[in-house]
Length: 460
Ligand code: ARG
Image 1 (cartoon, rainbow, N blue to C red):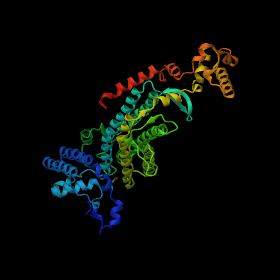
Image 2: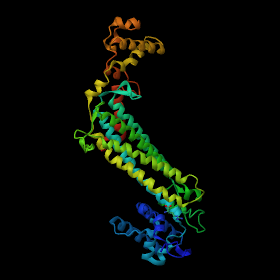
Image 3: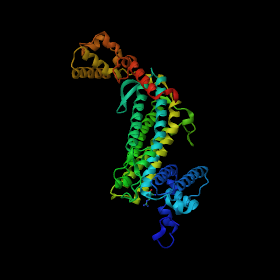
Image 4: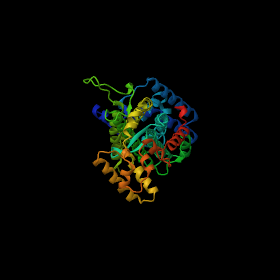
């Protein structure tokens, strides 16, 4: 019998029970729910609403429920709807009237608002920690490839030579911002909803500061209506996960391209690839592809939580129960990606010669020549035009930029000298980009040093 059944007549149909239950997915909140109840009952005792002895008994039973659920020795049933009612019913079953005092000055509305906040606080630690592991794997791969040169791309066309390490560190920057976003979101979950009741607070003289403090919040939420109906933090959290997934998806796309015959820049370890059931020669980068594909469901979760909240009148509405499955699915998916991705990066082999060969087309150094002319006080636009004409000259006459004689070069660029002929090596090109944030060898080494220190790479 449901705890709220007082004003209702008749039994509920199974299909309706199935439709309304959330225990199938909110049971994972049990630790948070019990932590909240323990703080609440302690406060009720302090304020004189339950005796110290009752509070102690309830606390002991709550602890026992945690170990029973952990052991798989607790029966969940859809009739009891959600995790809050399962735990409260169990307390009442064990302690009778004493247990029936637990829900004093509390509603499931402030209870669930508390539980998800506590849950996200813990979950964020795992996600940030795993993100650090991924960053560390990328930094270690960059460190192994301090001198590996590859073509950098814009519009997926060869642009300029860059260090492979520089490319990898670009992703380390993205994941740093992702961790920062999750951190920010948690920082905003700093006020405790307990004591907001169903909507309007309570007539009972409870101490909201005490529960807030016990549960690690900076204080009680200022507005009870906002506190029970706010799900901004879920939207923010899932948005942060969606942006993270977008970054993983971009990296996956790079890796899929790099593995292709056409690029041939990296080889993934066999463990991270699968074969084809039909074509015996195939080695497919499925882990990268699946990570890219799973991004779709995380975006779906974000759209779901935003849509659930949109158009809800204040304050709590049962629609809000629907926020949990997309939240949990997005978090589970991100953790799944993070459980395999660092290993794939660690075991990925760079094919250095292939990358260097692809970066050796002298056309990739055309900008270097234009900038060299700028050093000779030619306005950049003019230098750009002159080099463009030189490139066309080469194309029309079947020549390469690096095989022109000084005479040929001077015929189109009179300001050119012997040194201009030496600019067409990718190693030279990279080594001339020692600007802050550039792809120069020393600069990238400095960046690797920065990340190793920041991430304490030794620990990963
Ligand atoms: N299972 C509900 C949820 O997730 C808990 C709160 C239910 N409150 C209520 N008044 N029915 O939102």
